[in-house]
Image 1: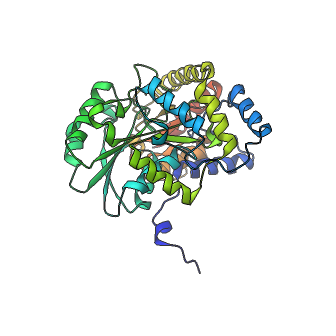
Image 2: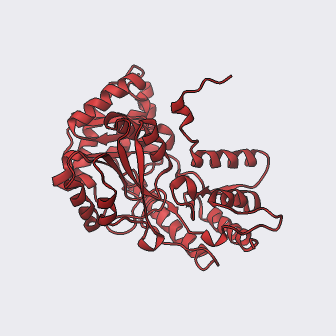
Image 3: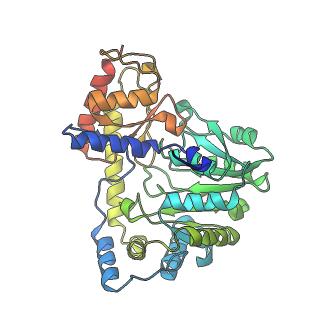
Length: 398
């Protein structure tokens, strides 16, 4: 008999990881699966970063590191925040964690009490919902439309705020849509936040360097809400370091201290070798980072061009990250030639996996039941073949 806690029972399995696992299992069985499910760059970690890790091993970085991260790494992050984002965070305001996901749950557990409301913007990243549930909070979803580039209006935010609202989670560039808020759009949102004392913002900026037009704007750069914003970032996406598991955030000192206390009981300081690699990444040079961004831009243009014009598929061209989220509501309620009914986006994702041998993620997990998420963090050749297979499989639905 299983005696699982209610806490664990309340959580769902990450659908991005679940679909990736299904793809791996089929590939191991000999099927020619093209995976467009995980948000993972297909590039190798740049040489200078790997060399820094090797030097750290030889330099005997094999003891427990400080809980919030090595001082020189936090100093480099402080400098990065100042030079790239215009944000003044001292080392004491910065905590290094085991990936951006770890940074997020540290903050949520530190400031959200049971019954507190947390606003998330749909489509949202899958783990936001379950991390809020884990903290005993109540997710409040603001839905957006493809026609509006999946962006909220200030009026929508104002309407969603109550006296129980503790936190807004904001993500630009967005996972899963790839949409980017302009500085003007963000300032209007910041002004709404300013009006509500006790409302805080997590600004998830993990994709800040993968932006194709305009300039990234940090939410904390609006000085009138600086002391109510927690800026979360990391090295996974921009530096192809997903497996190194290094995230970080800058926050008001009292929040940083709380997260330091919490992390001290969960993980202590995170991997010493990975921290030395992250230090090299953040200090640069940035040629590889820029090269990867240019490749993602080329791939974005390729996948959008290949999918454009497909009957029943509506698409908005993303401005950042490496995802595109087409609306496929036209196909919901249709059936395949073997009688399989496509009732929802998860059914559609499973159908594409079985028929097209392409792994994507259904939109239900992102709060977007009419959509699927496609990650184009793979080669041009695989994207071309995947688009061909998807279009052929969709054409069979009647």
